[in-house]
Image (tube, rainbow, N blue to C red; front, side, top):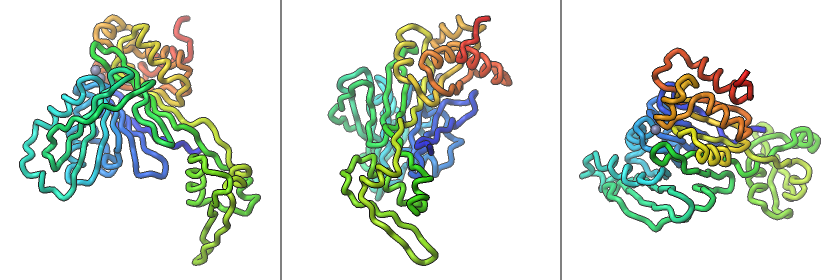
Amino acid sequence: MKPLFHPQLVNEPLGDPALYVEFLFERRALLFDLGDIGALPPRKVLRVTDVFVSHTHMDHFVGFDRLLRLCLGRALTVALWGPAGFIDRVEHKLGAYSWNLVQNYETDFTVLVAEYHADGPAPRSRFRCRSRFAREDLDPTVVTGGLLLSEPGFQVRAAVLDHKIPCLGFAVQETRHVNIWKNRLEAMGLPTGPWLRELKATVLRDEPDDTPVRAWWRDGDRVTERIYPLGELRRELVRIVPGQKLGYVVDVAYQPENSRRIVELVRGADVLYIEATFLEAETPLAAEKAHLTAAQAGQLAREAAVKTLVPFHFSARYPGRETEIRAEAERAFRGSVSQ
Ligand SMILES: [Zn+2]
Ligand SMILES: [Zn+2]
């Protein structure tokens, strides 16, 4: 299947955390954490619609300025989620600049900010360019089951984790994925093309069987088309499979309640991005700093039965030792840690 999400860590594992998740066929992306995003070209930054910030230690939030700088003067809205206290942090960031001239801008770049504390009301505020980014508190939204964002194609969930401060872990899941049987398409004499994207969207909207679907293609200058009832194409061509799931976990203490919440959040993920800040030899230091070791990261990935483990966010004390850290995480993930 062609995955919907195309995830990419913005930096090397010793650099700041930021996971850029681009959508197939859409000029749209999500960002998990906002560390230094200088390596992301502006056109990619401008595709970001939603940002999920685990916590506001500087290495996870310093990229806010670049996002702001690139979006300012454009007709864009960016939504940010973060842990308790996040709205104040964003307000302080915006409060660092002088905004005496922006009320006359033609566009109204808007930052929407929400905080996830626990299930229940989630505080929300808005900061608009033309209001000089003055904070406007909105009615809280209500979060159930950690569900921060739900759209027809995908959902983003969070869990509150402990890092001596609240720190959010995230999972993004495609709700369902529509596959097309290529051999049956050929048997019907139909070529691939943009019309299949429309067919998939119609299937995901669960439209009725008699909905007309236009299959069309170009033959030189000529456009050929055939109209089918959705029900027939659904029966003949379509297979619905579980969607893709990504997990993102950084900066957490290794303790039972964190582990339980992480495993529940990222269970069965296709890819888990997880911090592996320290080596196992420095487990006491990791505990003191409320971070994971590579072995602990691998163990959590194993318990959650994820398919692929991507350890990252290695401590700056380990330059040149990335292979060793990855190997330690992988051994714990495969279950061959104690011999
Ligand atoms: Zn931290
Ligand atoms: Zn960190």
